[in-house]
Image (cartoon, rainbow, N blue to C red; front, side, top):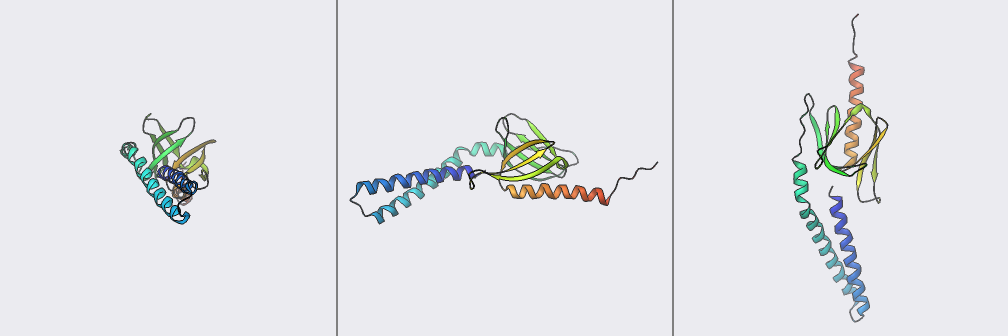
Amino acid sequence: MWYKYLKWGLVFGLISFICVFLTGVLWGKVNTYWWFVISLVSSLFIGVLVFYISRIMNYKEIKALRNIRIEEKEESILVDGIACCIGDKKKVGKLFMTNQKLFFKAAESHSQMSFEIEGISDIKIYRKWRMIGAGLMFNYNGEQTQFNVDYPGDWKALIETGQEFKKQCLVANPIVVEV
């Protein structure tokens, strides 16, 4: 979820670059080349500063999200990560993938959502503004669900691998009923 911090750094850096450069050009008595270098260095400094300030401001939130755990019997957690569920209301929490299902646990409302691997279909990766903000979108029992996660391609690959594994287990080990 570091995209949002990067976005803030880029936006403030670009704004500061434009302001400093235009100030130098409008002032008119300064060499344009040197003013361009000065505005570039100052915008990089301001962008990095805003990036780190925004990370520090949200550090408590991220630290609290790292402490979310689930206890599922007969299931092992394969991967977990901080996620933002987009639906009626935006919920920040943690997304877990076990060997049987996807599980989301919200941080503030303590709500939980569970998605069986077999019921997930039409998995897509979506991006906002082509560069910033990436997420995972899928249908579960006819209802569309979206999560903003880091590395959505890896999440998609793991879900598809889990679905394929379940199918192969059923083919390799058919259920035999004796009459």
